[in-house]
Image (cartoon, rainbow, N blue to C red):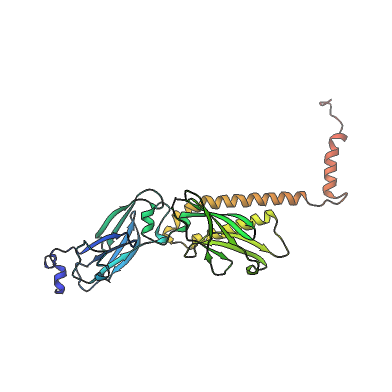
Length: 321
């Protein structure tokens, strides 16, 4: 085929310049795209979800590598024009994760539409996603230390009927697979137990974290080792501070385009944490004030005695009489 044949649709027998399909077996969108005006250039394709571009790729792969999965399409005469797309984890927003349908489109960088379809349900959406967005799918709740292990549960927020592949990390040590020992019948709650070995703890503050396969944190639990033992109020405060730090890291490590939606999702949690911290601080101030020692005959004691004695020593006025 001559280079000029690409510009002439009749010279290639009416073969379309771009086509795509969803390969559910491998969880991807594949297809081909040939530039109509430049036989030597490669086309750029974009993946759109609900009118928002989330990924792009250069159509320069060999068509023969996808020949089996592209069966049924009219393959182009140009070999290196294929592409493969998956939804990036950071590209999913809270509005996408649910039961509502999500529109999916593949376009060329010049605005030409290659594929337009609708994704029905969360399972189909996750099938095409490169890594599950653990912060949108699961929530971690810690129940405390018992029998030398940290007990807790992973709450399934959207009914994904499978155990999540999560990791447990102690301080900055290498993460290990999170071991689940029991799951609810409906698959919405998965109970876990993390062994806490004394020889792996350090003096002072320790932190046990639960994170996703890519290291994205889901929650953390502080453990204090040493002579000074944290009281109940201090332990709760440390846990809240660790949760605030986790939310801060979670927000700062996300795709900037997805920040507004994820900030709205986390706003209520941050407000509740701040409210609890202020309540604990007020309680501590009240305890400190009540526990302040007052010297005999001191200013505080004298003022209190004068205030108590004043109604009994003042003469009654004529109006009162």
